[in-house]
Length: 298
Image 1 (tube, rainbow, N blue to C red):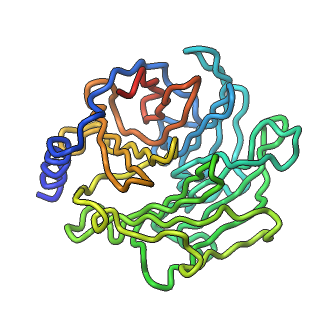
Image 2: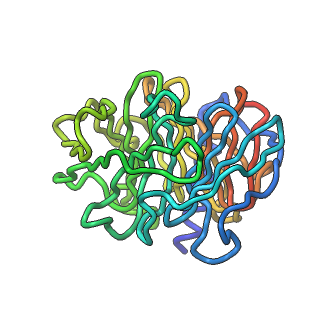
Image 3: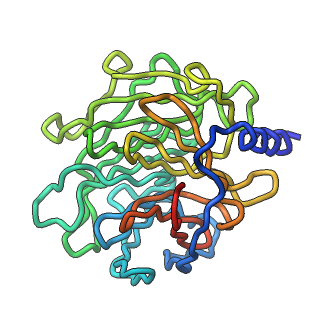
């Protein structure tokens, strides 16, 4: 019954969504080559793109780096993150604004732990890692923790970088996606600098914004949430596991106007969608069955 209710809510969401975005065409680029990816416990999770390189994460903190060339991609590196751990779900990957060293191939990588269990006593911690120049290892540079003393979040707090504005957004459930009382909270902070130390605690009173989507808009939804990406002041959220009761929908939240739009991806993708990035002016989505390149967003 809960799964059916989730499907009905998703269907109603699409019917009631604001005009402007609709079902898209996507091109399947192929299967990824993650570590033991066909085995249980090695699911694909976070992903982001920088230049002509795509970094794909798996549960526990496995990283695979690919070089992109048009619609083709080639594996160039695979390693365990410095924070590789059974309770690191590596749910969202978001490249930051700065490189640790100007010769580094990537900016700092921000990785959402996002696990039911805490990491060294910390819930939903954000790891900041430096990818080595040879793309074969990483180093933990900074750890960011939200002091959730007001119990703002329930299960699954995720983090994403707004690069142009140098902001850090947290997004998550107040309970969980199977609870009818669940709501969705967004919290905004200035992106901490490395000069603030190896361990940074964000406090509720330091937030620039802290609100529930359902309280500032008329939009109601309760999806199985996955990745995050900020582009032109909008938060893109791929959801769903590719099933009838849990359709693949990308929610697009306007961070300035506080309105929601939806993109129906059920006709052009398959499987569980996980995270997304931008490549050559288009969105590229990572799913459990590979990569999909969205041709347009109208």
